[in-house]
Picture 1 (cartoon, rainbow, N blue to C red):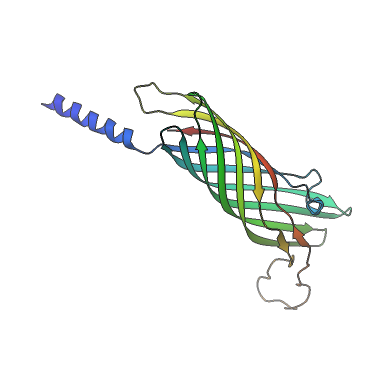
Picture 2 (cartoon, rainbow, N blue to C red; picture 1 turned 135 degrees about the vertical axis):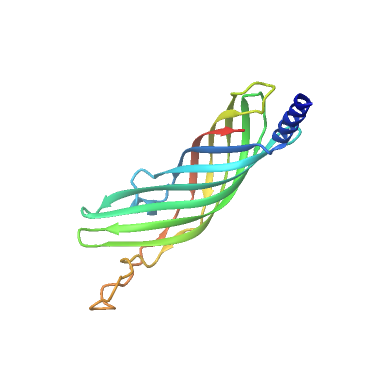
Length: 221
């Protein structure tokens, strides 16, 4: 009786595990290319590098797979201009995306991807005497295509665990980010002069739309 009960419980646990929706995590590097001359303020080679971490789930349809994912991206760069001024751009973003994968073979999956997000862009200007900065939030949209190379690491009679490499290209679209009040940090504590030397500087609009490519590695189980 005990043996029969153990077998039944084992089968029930295996069935429940098999019905759990596939889950995946990935981590990788993405690069955005901003070719507008205005971007030269913060970088000289037009490239902005970011790290991205994503989590999501997969719906297995008849001939393709739908990956729904949420991710966070962070990156930054800087350049020295006018001999003594250091300017920099930092970017932190949250996004959700949908990817349609088309398994050609068990290991080769071309895909198309669309997404939307919200980014916080921080522009800073630093000299020997002071540091000015401003953070502006802006919506973003992404679209692209690529391929996933997938390797199964479990046996066929076990729940599937896969390692995958994701390589893709596409574009990112954002409205121009207006840095109209780049100024010193907010004062802390009582000040002798509560007004002086705290005005913001209008540095104009920074275009942050352009091409993008990415390389991600992850696990799906």
